[in-house]
Image 1 (cartoon, rainbow, N blue to C red):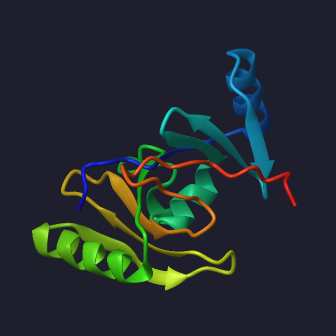
Image 2: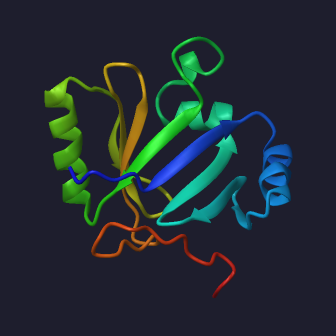
Image 3: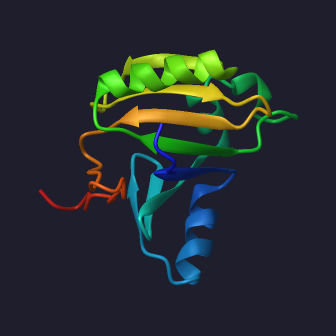
Length: 145
């Protein structure tokens, strides 16, 4: 696994309030399907409802109590086979797979595991989020046709 974080997703209680806060700081976001994406240097910062994020990670039982901090780290890769390989390597290293890798209705392939301290990591192949040779991720322009 390359040492890189591609996306940081923050589980927020009020998406409009969170977006307004970041935009008041001068950040420019794009909202797509009740999720806001910001380009943050070579990675993306994503705002998404806390309950939806927990459910997507297979952690819905922990959404409101101890155990889910409301943050998911993502490591994007270049192929579905890489997702499978990294999920298996994480499990061998002691991770708990909370959502087995699968294809989504949006066209990407992703799985989620937690490290021994419960931090959620998504391993994803998303052809719509291009990766440079050095692993830098670019948030696409969702308004472009």
